[in-house]
Length: 303
Image (cartoon, rainbow, N blue to C red; front, side, top):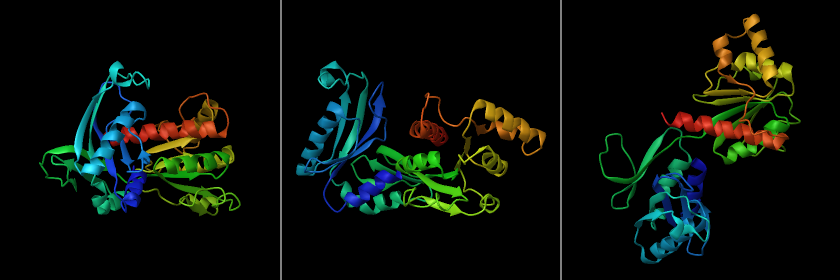
């Protein structure tokens, strides 16, 4: 989410209209919170779901830019509205169009760099503001922006190299750990990726920040087990281990037998990590892992 606010802050040097979906009923191409930035030259950043829904909102956003008048919208996504574009979801969406959103640049900058949850919204008369804990105002839209989830990856091989850039695009803050500087460097990982390089026994002394996710994808079972023997005791919000069900069973039995972990601790480890999408190849495996990470992040944000 913070990535979109970076784009909002960067765009704020020129006029644009921010449109967002404030609510949905039934089936819709996007959920509440979907956003798009519309510029006078037709450029769009973000999406409200594409198709005729986005085209209609864009037309209204361009009008709002010309008139300076914000607006609410509500659209029923039925046959009459979307048949030509195949948009026959059957639900409805409502939202707001804010032609003066660039004036909230300071807020967008703050949301792009949040270190703790910040709540903001659009008031009844279309003003954009932060929301205090005791605020009882009428709001057309409210949202809590949380810092990116920290994703710690043990290993810097092919799977880690495929996961890290995708995770960064999906608003995870990635740190990679490995003892191989020839792989754990920015030739193989995005510049935003933090790298921790050294001996494993030193690397595994680092404690994760609160609510971090962990992913173990080292170069072999022995290194996986070494990393797991430490990380299994840390309070990761989610911990995944690459491998098969057979590998999970063998390591589980070994850990319990050697008193490296309890059955309850091991049961919190997702192995094989990733959703079962019949993934083949490194990049498909990365997609399956990110799908599970997104799912777990969304589950945690419900509470």
